[in-house]
Length: 426
RNA sequence: GUGGGCGUAGCUCAGGUGGUUAGAGCGCCAGGUUGUGGCCCUGGAGGUCGGGGGUUCAAGUCCCCUCGCUCACCCCA
Image (cartoon, rainbow, N blue to C red; front, side):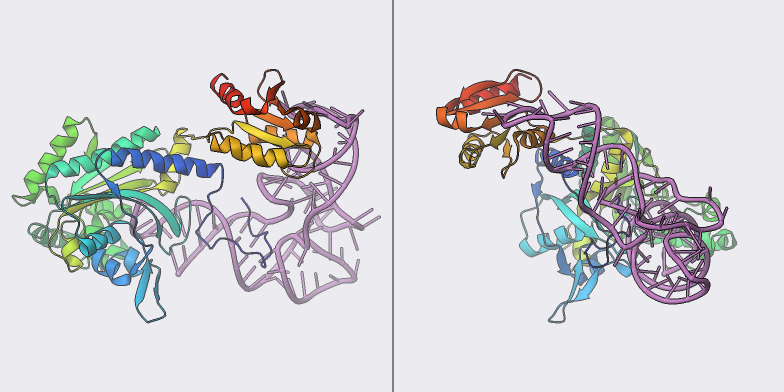
């Protein structure tokens, strides 16, 4: 990990951003491929939307009062004066895309996206991090909530993770939440002196946020608070019950957390969150989501229910490191070409072998055979394919296995088959 | 936005109370084999000691400022 050593004159990645290079990037490829396989086999199609959006997409969607929009969003004026923003999350852009194109409902989409938030970086938190996620629009059926949670859970399990907790809660809807919020505010006012400094004077701004305050004072003061799930209306109550029974039927262990109040204004009804128990750093939330039945309307479209989740790639990989799972290694090269004459054989043979479907790389330049073989060994290839003047004259190559086995001369036309055989019989 | 810790080769780190040309291991390159890797041996390249200012005969070492990295709070993936 390089520190401030780099001279000021050479550029470095901006604060809070990071490069993902080979071979770690191979793990990312496998991560995304695994996710794509799972969601596409559940009916979700890729939605690739711009990194830039009109700032209003998030201001109206996520809500001005949220920290993410209020103080962390990368927002700037474009050359023509319109306000643009780097997407801080994945849901609002997908809903915007729905409103713009109106695909037939129900519409199920998945995404892979960078997300930008101007925060002080720390372990598991970046100014540019990456998320995969899904969104399903146009259905209020509680069984869809179960499906969405199952997809997230199934994906984490597939990576090999086991040490995490799934929390769920219901945020109610526009019918039952206001009454509950009023009830909660009354309770909090009654216990005002017991709250922490920050929340004492901000009860009315958003009473529900007091619930997930981590300070012991607030924790204690809200111990006997009324629960929202006890005050759900006749639509939200049964909906939540159906979600719970669905999860139970699938054997998914979900813990009701009355304090689970997610930070975006658009959430309604079902909300959920996955927290890793293996990550030692403070940022242990590896994924979360929920229903946002009012979001499309808030963005100026017709009422359209929706539900989805986002999973943080960096944090999940951190959890995988901690649990020692998902160590995706890239497949080794089948061969490494060494040309000791003039490079013509390596040039032609490498292309020929690649077109035949083999994984092949080569050395360049005039270096000693020893140096070439060192490079071949370092590459991890199964075999070195050497062409010297003898081989070039006789139309053969020297095929040298690098993981045990005898070197032998092979006619040029049989190199592909020989390499394939070597790969299949280790 | 607030607070703590840390900045010496590509990487991981040594460098008592300031004292001559700043070191090691790993990695890289080359040689030990006219065309044979991994092990071993030898040699080499690579550092404005994050940057600037100050104290001093003398600063990697002491003081100040600054930048960067990192961890935590807040919030969140």
